[in-house]
Length: 233
Image (cartoon, rainbow, N blue to C red):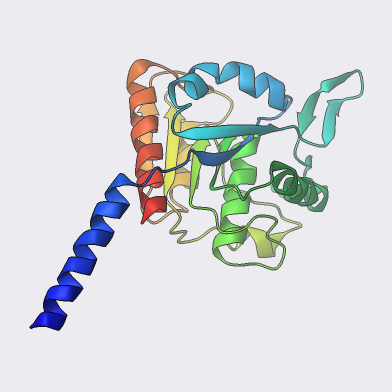
């Protein structure tokens, strides 16, 4: 019929427009590890950002708490306290969430995804969970993806309601796990991977790093491109 033909013409036109649309780079928030800073993680990941600069814009944030009074350049996202029973309390998480909220406002556009290394990956897991579960404390909007390197799940004994959110996460995630990582053991990083329903995992032979060899960069770029194409739909 004429109506069916018109509908088909409209759908084909939309597909052609979609295929020719210019997709802007993704907006990625980057969170450093314990005793690092935003500028230090930026230095360590310069090969990553150079390789992916057409796919994403990377914004590096520095944590609010100094790890040592005499070395204020080393920062942490919360102040950890080891409990007698073996768990941990995380102090200052509310201040960190407020800092993240302010960072998105300063960026002038929502963050599409988050990249976290080590303790920053633990924070990233919380941000993804808060966002996906639409928790009232979520500092960011709807995150499309996470890149979690040498990380661990957010598990704070004093914040059990947050830790409980890290189950069955559907947000696309890319995990890097170092076979020789002595700071965050591979088994711990696999616990973080297990919080997600369909994680993409890169296991590399290195240690506690964000891998930047050619093969790792290719896999990360492919993941980012897939998220970029998904954003276009």
